[in-house]
Image (tube, rainbow, N blue to C red):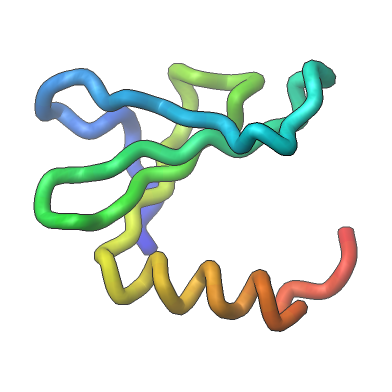
Length: 72
């Protein structure tokens, strides 16, 4: 996972989960060329972006499902 600014390529299509409410506390995800993913905070769309390779994103999602990150 690499924190970056907005990727320099063509604009990304950012998506929020359908489970997200309208409170502004959302994480958005975008597909990257090559199968990776980018994540950002919906409250700060011009802020930092985390980029993941395909394998890193799969591991991140699996960890989240398994509760590896604890409760916030």
